[in-house]
Length: 267
Ligand SMILES: Nc1ncnc2c1ncn2[C@@H]1O[C@H](COP(=O)(O)OP(=O)(O)OP(=O)(O)O)[C@@H](O)[C@H]1O
Ligand SMILES: [Mg+2]
Image 1 (spheres, rainbow, N blue to C red):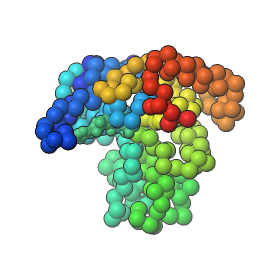
Image 2 (image 1 turned 180 degrees about the vertical axis):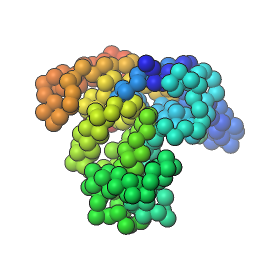
Image 3 (image 1 turned 180 degrees about the horizontal axis):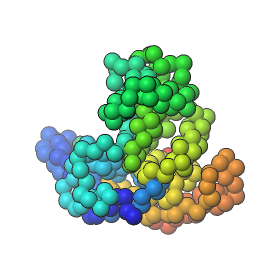
Image 4 (image 1 turned 120 degrees about the vertical axis):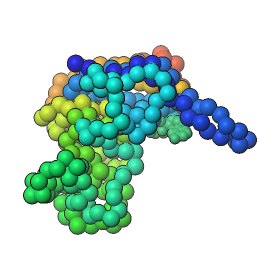
């Protein structure tokens, strides 16, 4: 079943140009995308093409101007407890300690206090921050804050997980650990994940399919299925098959005549 069906979505923003005049900026245009139930789909595209805009719309944080978006075959609702988002920059509540930030979603879901603490501890351990549970966000580094934000959404266990470059601010080793960890968690209950990244390698490692967007106004240009076996381990990351897919993706991007400069950042 399709979890998400986006049809001919259009999003425009009113902006002021450098002369101070109002102008329309078309960010998404003719945007079509189907995401299957339980699928791990990555979204790649040049900076400013509208990836975060699309995720914000799905999260109910932004509107769209034309087209249609269905979730579970029903029109997208603004409010839903079944969606979780990890933003490009961590969004923690500064007045709550780390552990209480993790418990936030569970409180909304009315999970009992003891159970909340137990789950929160588990996920905090998973991201290697067990020792920091009583610190406040400002006492953590940027990467640590992002790990708390990731742990929080994983603990919340939403039906649809929207992740906007969640690992971009992390050091390489933590990033690789969390990629494998995210897959391990996802493989248990196969919730639908839409994952924005600028890394082709990350997209190939994680995804069932990788969707490429054009530059603004953004639309889906190409979708590539990733036929690597699961679970995707370090061995798979280093396999010849992985390298072959990576090469194909590159060739395809070049054939698509996407500006090589926009994709230079993807490696
Ligand atoms: N609220 C807003 N008002 C006006 N313009 C906006 C707004 N939000 C986004 N934009 C514009 O929409 C375009 C797409 O932004 P968006 O954040 O979706 O890009 P992106 O694909 O996520 O880029 P990146 O890879 O850099 O994160 C940009 O040109 C941005 O300036
Ligand atoms: Mg973005």
